Image (cartoon, rainbow, N blue to C red; front, side, top):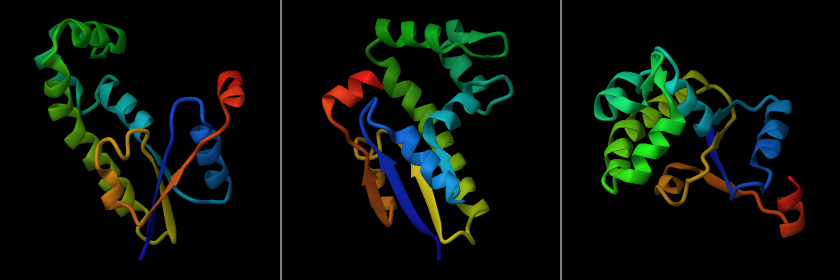
Length: 139
């Protein structure tokens, strides 16, 4: 049985460095941010539904994150609508990754908003990356 280890931490704490350490040890690592980038890229599964909901963010066959950010800033209901579209797609990508690596002894799931979204209950363990303020600022 594969042990699912969630990885989280605030911006600039060293999540990417920590994830790379696991990769260097041969652990399969799934990155939530990278999954969203793939979903928003031309041909990605989120392009059509997000583009339909937010037409101004649909640019050159993909989702323009800067344009999407402007939409979210201007409409207080847009974030909930976006999350209703994207979260299931991200969850499906995560589950596919886990299934692909079902024979691995451990799979690391790099999820920046792990606790905020309640995903800790889907993990066998959670590693929280932290550092001092000076190191965070210099990163």
